[in-house]
Image 1 (spheres, one colour):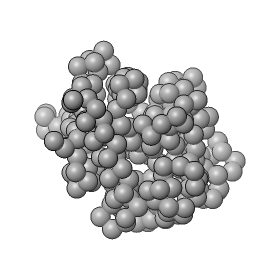
Image 2 (cartoon, rainbow, N blue to C red; image 1 turned 30 degrees about the vertical axis):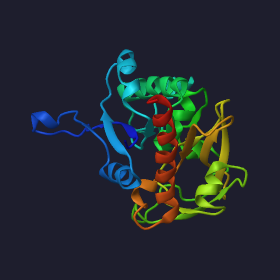
Image 3 (spheres, helix red, strand yellow; image 1 turned 120 degrees about the horizontal axis):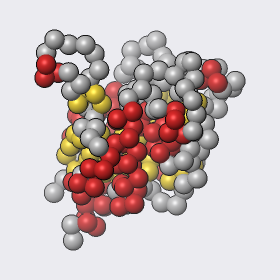
Length: 246
């Protein structure tokens, strides 16, 4: 049986006259396709009450926290910066509880862009609410190029799982104005952009968590490094499935 991959949903916040599309839950089609191509079964979870996470936790083997709105800064003890973007607290509450229970249950965890920031904040770290807060951030991290095209390089720590997946110097896309600041105690930095902005995090003690700041779901069709990130998620999730279904 193929491993099941949870995709916590984003919420369609745009005004619409179609009643069934108001605040509709959705997952990005490229992420769904990337997981299917890598051999997983995607399951989309809407943002329900955090107390209901317990009823979801045994439905999946791995989880991918995806891109989207900014993380509410109060979750990491800060009032909102003037350049903080749109937030959706209901999603944050659900995802942070899902993250904590997934960690406790030993599920495979992958983060993309906002997903990496959510993982870090949910485990006790903090986030630059806007890169203008970081005096060293000088690269263009919100590219003007098409979103499925790479725009800058990152340097990967040779002593990391990411290095085995992407190599030392992957060329990545970049669409973010926030970035990880203080690292959660259970995580370590495994890649940075040339200006020092953190581009990847991993678990310190095991291979449970891997998260990247870029968007491999938009590049997996033509970039082997991006494709390999989803293959890694499926491989880690398969181990969880084999462990839990004995």
